[in-house]
Length: 260
View 1 (cartoon, helix red, strand yellow):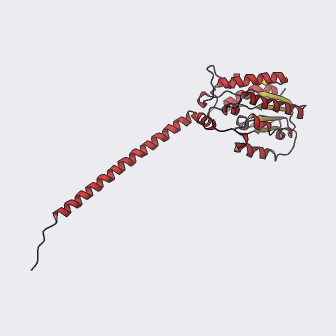
View 2: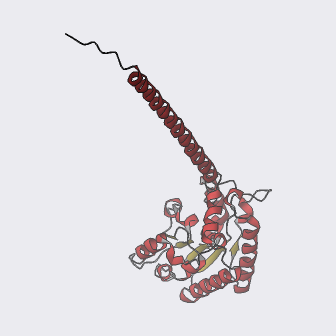
View 3: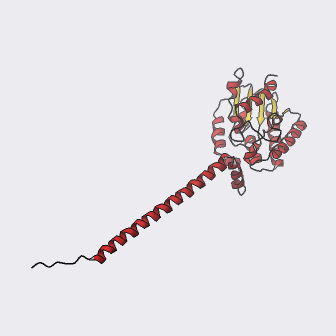
């Protein structure tokens, strides 16, 4: 004789309840995951906006404020200086000497009728230039166009120290290359988005002009050609380095000295 058993209603209800609870947990997990993803994307967007506005330079300055700056910490300096040391000794018409603002222009192509050497290094400072003058002297240039200083300002190096380095640079070049004409170019203005105050650039240039007067060396004021009425710099895409239009103004400002 067969025995009929009654379905276990409690077990069935328990399974349904468990499934519902599992579904609710999954939904909560998904909701939390979406919320976290949205927060991450929002924070990323904020960071990108800050970087785009140029606050990268301010953050970089803050990060360096607790670090004693050494020009040899700059990888570009080591890379470029060691490359320069491989270059053969020769006679050139002009050496353009400076930091990335100098390094990033095609001097030889622009002044194609002259023999030109580019001795610019990204992020370089006055002390860095002072310690690589041998790679300038072995080019035996007739003229040198020097621009250096914006990174001294960015790293908040003492103005007196920068001027001492500048004086050593100019004195050493004048003694090593007595027949070479040395032109000192002002530091260019920067865009206000960099966090660098152009009043500091102006103060640097004022001291530099006075130094040149004392050494009887020509000083070329490019700053005044590029700064706007509201003390800003607009011929730039990143706040510091000139665009083609900015370099064109620079070339117009020095052309008479290049060919004199």
